Length: 351
Ligand code: RIB
Ligand code: CA
Image 1 (cartoon, rainbow, N blue to C red):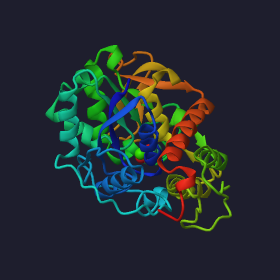
Image 2: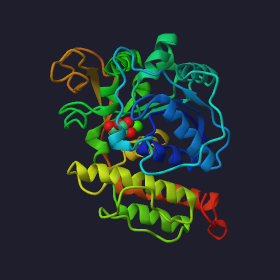
Image 3: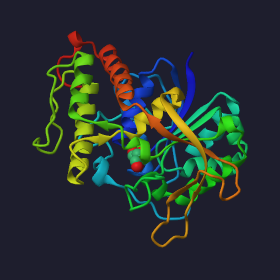
């Protein structure tokens, strides 16, 4: 049975894979996409999602524009990480589809009220628009069936400052509003938190791109290399594989340039897989709060695992998974999806 899901994204290379993963998943129905400012400005996030949806031949899925800025601080973007437009070296065809007339926070509220107890929320970007939605509808934690958040770092270094993670860093006030709001949630409605502790074990490598191409029947099967010059260069016959390869190569370059190896941490498609199937992970309950005033530690997520604060748990933090199992599932689903969308015998010329 298809699970209804709202994606709140800051697309982003790995957000792009999260979208493709859900489009490729028979057990998912994307009820709407909230475009949140983060990796790139919200308007660019929206364009990226409309473009991927059109390339993928997806149904008319609503894409709603989020707030231009975080709740209280100026927006910081990271084109050095995800590319000038947020999709690496990929140059997607300009979308002809148009944006929703609703705002992203309105989309959250309207969908949660329309599908009480059914809607899964997946956040793979800053929590600005979810926080705004909570201000309108404080009952969201009860209305949602499940919430999965890619964000934070607990017993693990940050990726933006020594202690904080990008999605929280961009809008820490919003993150605190979200975690505080779930303090009253029943145990089965606590957010599932995919923090860097676990998502930095999800290491995509060139071999995974080659396996995706093989699964999609795309030719040639390319082995991207750190020696490749910058810029779009994939000659893959399958347009989804081609653009995906060009997008991910930028992310590989970024990780290599930061001494992490020629690989990419696939934070967001992992969170998407967890949103559809929480049996992929093991979790531990904790009380999570967000530091807002620390000179060195602002936007750090802090987990109280032992009840030291005397506050009930408000999150289930992912503490274990099997990365290989996730990659098998992601490559199988996106590879088959790309093949069915662009059958090998039909892919002549570039799209
Ligand atoms: O810290 C990783 C997260 O920040 C990912 O969601 C990435 O897309 C960026 O949004
Ligand atoms: Ca993201």
